[in-house]
Image (cartoon, rainbow, N blue to C red; front, top):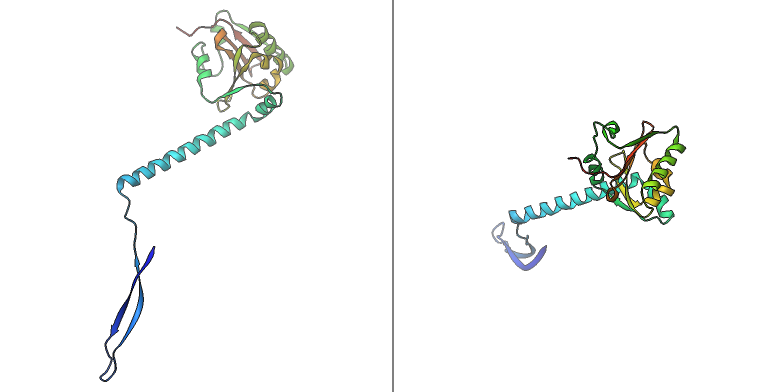
Length: 205
């Protein structure tokens, strides 16, 4: 900021004998600068900026992941079906703790008491998923829907949503899991044209 402190006279010496010396005045501006920030203050400002950027990146990432299942969410909202979005990978870890997964999908041949059924088309696939969930779970039981695309968030909702609106979940991805941890239930719908499931699961020893 520029502060006007005073008017100071500037005297000029005569250039030759007999010339009268004159005085003139010039406006002098004094600039006052704020004290430089200390090193610790600069570091604190930088840390705050980094945290702000990281928070923004995280928010944008979650918004992007949410948009991947935008059609599903719009469908559920239009029918006033309650759900909760899970952005963590806990639901898939629950499966990995209980099943052999050599590469992608469950190795059902190594799962005692499993049931595995081949399907011929999408209609039969959807019918199998709905029928199996309805047979082993109550409509009010909480389930988690997990898709094969790891970027997709997971959905927590009631089993009745999967029973009566199977297509909206199955059409999102060719690989799908429906789990109910409380009942030890896991169903896998695979792009290899089968549905496998197991009830009464416990964690691997």
